[in-house]
Image (cartoon, rainbow, N blue to C red; front, side):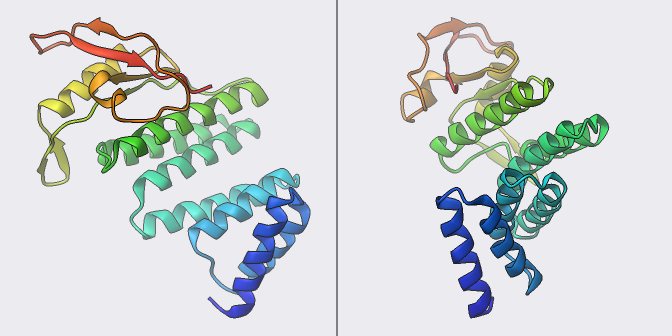
Length: 220
């Protein structure tokens, strides 16, 4: 990245902090035209394009950010960007294309079901639900996603994660309602959710003898 690009990106981000989305877009777009940007900068370009009324340019920047996250082997960030792309396509009423981006996000998250940090898992789950909630509010439709979270040990077998705790997370997810983030108390006790967790409850999990203690994590 050249000094000129660096200065343009820095100035663009300063404009974003002032909510001057038009100036931010012009500066970041100029930086992009002068050479390749990293995926974070493309994400900023997309955000400034969206808020300055440039939906097509926003989608283009998000696609480039997505490609960058894939190339840099950041599947979780790529999955979140895929959900943002789905939101943009739903806004254009391109439902089939939006559904395709949702499926990409699902595949990415399925291939990386474990997080190194429990708080990152909660933050990701909350962001997913908020993304689809915005879509429903602004455009009238978005899929209802159910998310289950648990913490524990996993065993890596090739590209797959296995073990009792992996299965427990899947069973907890099956109990979640549409639009809910349902987590085991093992996880809830060590994270800082955006709002206080709901009262714990016991649920029976298929394949497990003991009941699981879980709590719903509010995200709105």
